[in-house]
Image (cartoon, rainbow, N blue to C red; front, side, top):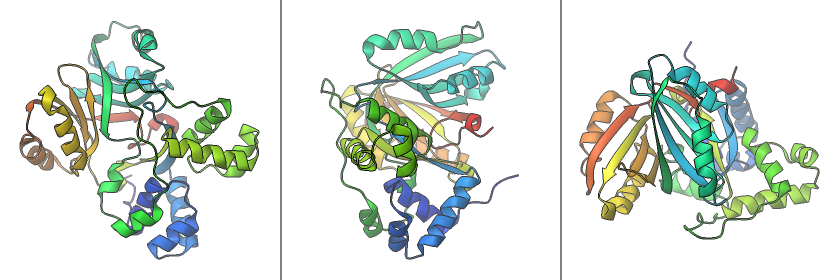
Length: 331
């Protein structure tokens, strides 16, 4: 049975939490002009129904890690078990099936370039049902991580966004720059927040075995440095924003930055990045309908200077990743 869609206040609360995931309900209520009991009740209902999760995630760029996109073509009927195997791995995200059910696409991360070859070769299940595998390194993110498509819905006014926004975070480390340094306590906090970004301080204290002042200080430091960001895992059908479509662009090298920056501003784009490979720009779209996808790809997307080829792949089923609930975690 299809779940009810989020109403206006639900969307405002979700957007507020995307901006400042650990904001007290009192602060969100003041900005939205409602009561903190209403905010708490609405959030509790959305969370307990399994429609949303708030996740505290680590930014691989700030940790000096290397991110990759994997594309595996499979024989008919083999994609689902392969996607499920990939989704169970802690180092994968955004695991989906596209292309009529015979291609698995996922993103993954490695500690560094030296670790990448071993990781990529050992990640896919050993099976003859995989026909072909491609890997592209993610070089630069134009829109993504803490920048969610929720922020493009217009649910909040600029003044409300500003009232909720926490202190500015650091920019990702430049290529060749020094990654942020984290210790064992930071790693414990990151692991706990990856399960629930609003885990109470008292529970974090008990699990990390450090004082509350240390917990608050470490979370603030991780957040301010850009190592930690928050995202909302939500059921897309309840927001009526359409199923994702993956887009791979072949762009003239001198136009890659301009194309990526343009994609970041367009409301249809949920994620955009530069990659290695013949298709050197990747984007995830959230079109509201096939007609809207056609209008966008033949209009604003095709009009971007330097775009030489466009490959579109609608997502048939999502297995893992912020932006669509991971069915493996809901069983």
